[in-house]
Image (cartoon, rainbow, N blue to C red; front, top):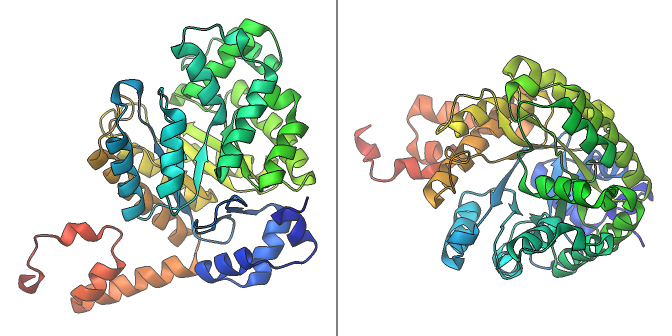
Length: 403
């Protein structure tokens, strides 16, 4: 089967490559060559017809992803639909559905049916959560179950999957022995860790990685190599556990690219601002400069209730250092499920961080937009001020004629 990477390596420029090149303001040859090397990915499942393809990677605009999550006690399609609406109105670039409820499949299908932007999922979360909610033993989940659920998500049209392929059995043992200050912060990674502990088996997403790649190649779905051991506290950043996981990630990156599967790396967590550039550079170097997805980023541990601010500081530093996709953090994420208003605020904060990063990276489109805004502000050209603002709703209710 011919994936986008393989087509690019054969010097074929597809319609999707042309489309993203036009969107990004770069030449088609640049997209083709970067795609061939794995330095750019294009989010679009072969089966999705209405989705606009989105490019993520080096030399183009930093993108923003928001997670959509509806918990068991908030099984409301209205809530999920409203959050999807906010995500699309605020023009995020992609969505990661990490819902954990009895209606995981229905909510995912609703998102896929109504989203015009790429959608990602963590397929393992579905089988893991269902086992826990039905009070079943995790060891009843087979390795084939784990691969089958990935196939199901891909066949439904998801554009990328986030999987903890790097959470190996030896790494799980190292985590127990090390006695880390912070625990595993990802729900899916925690369930997978518990499965490894109960079954004493190797993680199937690592042990059967080639089979996983075959599934993804079939649909041209992008693989996000999610980290299980991003630091959940500043004290744990740059520890041996984190570095070991990045080493495994580098191995899997090479195997994915060799099979023509698009892949993104993962990283950051809680890291002090001064160390973020070196960590970004390290991850990018280990993983052959493939796109880096920054998630759960925080520049300090004490900003509970204002984590969107701490996250924006970390995200801006990461983006300026070469990160390519930033995940949204709402101010209350550590405390509770965010409301749509809180989600929206987190999205705007993350978009500001992405724009700051792009200015630092001398992205032509970001520089041009920033200059237009500066020129408009100097001349009090409110039409262009509003047009170039990241959040245009701030002007609602303001009589700009009096400004």
